[in-house]
Length: 248
Image 1 (cartoon, rainbow, N blue to C red):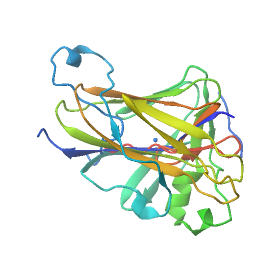
Image 2: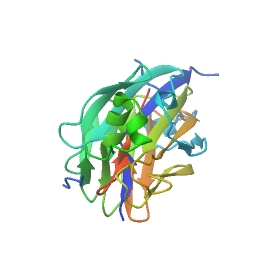
Image 3: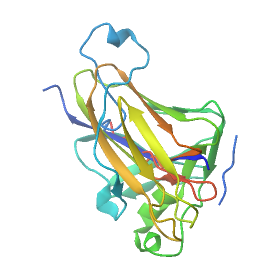
């Protein structure tokens, strides 16, 4: 099995200071993946990983899963070439195809040493997946993964001292065995692409918050066999979904 990262990443600024893969997630909330440092020396570092305080892994249930806290910095829907834009709970996720081993979109950079795998076909015609809204299905049905090593997300353009929120998803609803993906930035949280592993079953999302101590923040995604990242969605192999939603 491989690690899968759902393709929806989204970060939001909460407050100012105070199926198969093709091999080769100022309205943005940077709460999931961003951290800031109060130390002048830290500001000189190109990448930094402030400690993120993660909420519990939560089962996907509907559009209101997508947080609308704070001011949106950015949100992306990760997948293969042709991945669509989609709006869920008023938040626009811009489609981002992951090919090669290094892709940048706005303030977000995703990189892996082994080359990305991606799919836009990780959904299902069976509930509970099919009972979700079409926009949310679009977000969760596309994803990216790395088959041998983890995926590193770097968020840039942060304001030191501001509080950010970061949300990401991992989903694969095609009836394959569930894949675990762990996001780490000081602390860690682990999501399952389909806790019960049944056809049409849905995965999980998590929300983290941090105070930026640098102008950039790093979050790494790893799994026992494969990472599945759905920005705020999912990726799988043949049922990985990765979702990365970044609101900054």
